[in-house]
Image (cartoon, rainbow, N blue to C red; front, side, top):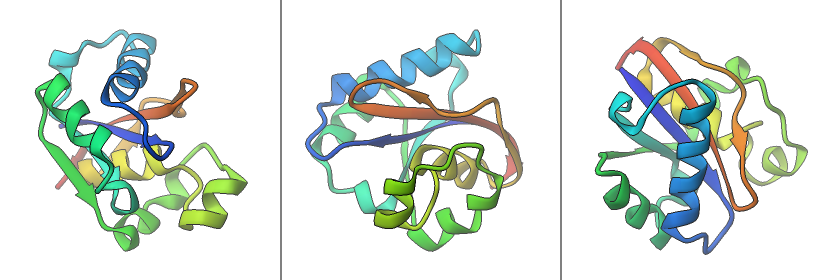
Amino acid sequence: MRAAGIGFRKNTRGEAIVAAVDAALGLHGLSRADLDLIAVHGAKAAEPGLAEAAVLLGLPLVVVPPAVAAAHDSATSTRSARVIDLFGVGSMAETAALAAVGTGGRLLGPRTATPAATCAIAEGGLP
């Protein structure tokens, strides 16, 4: 299983989220066809751009409860003081990706950042 975890600012449009996913995929030599799903921290689940991005990507969306995301925080490689203060995890994208692939998953690298969004790719694991 391979998941794209995403993080983004409030009111980010779907196209900007897709751009972050595409940037992360390109960095790892992957395409959209290599993804099984996108995942997001529960604090961002109601953002309209998120549903739009899922439709544009043609992928299912997994919403990761905050406590589940926090359980994967120690495996992240990125630590944002602002995100820690607001959401209790170092990287929303990385924790969402890791939680979505489950136990034993691994990040392909640190999150990729664009001006409006971030994306981390995780693979493996057992849901």
